[in-house]
Length: 104
Image 1 (cartoon, rainbow, N blue to C red):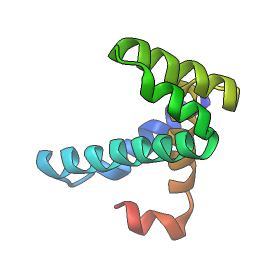
Image 2 (tube, rainbow, N blue to C red):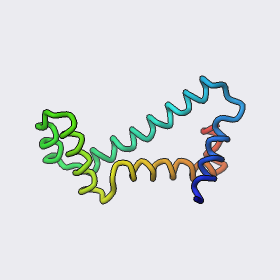
Image 3 (cartoon, rainbow, N blue to C red):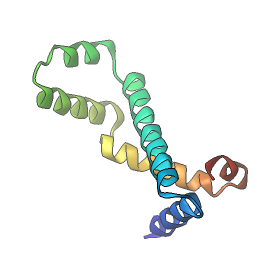
């Protein structure tokens, strides 16, 4: 797959010459970035009614299911697909020489 090579290059660029703790820190930053993008999308796309309805659900699994269903309804994509898009954009943007200095 085309993106597999991009992912491998991205990971190599980020990890080359780094200690294990530095690599772990970078992976944490990347994970937090993806989570923050998802969080922002939730509040961008969800209506006040969505948020109120979700808030009323007491069961954690049912709440999660409802969030996922409403996200798909509002965006036309699943949360997992959204995160793959975020990852793809991050990797593609890392190919831009102006951005790579902030990633290495």
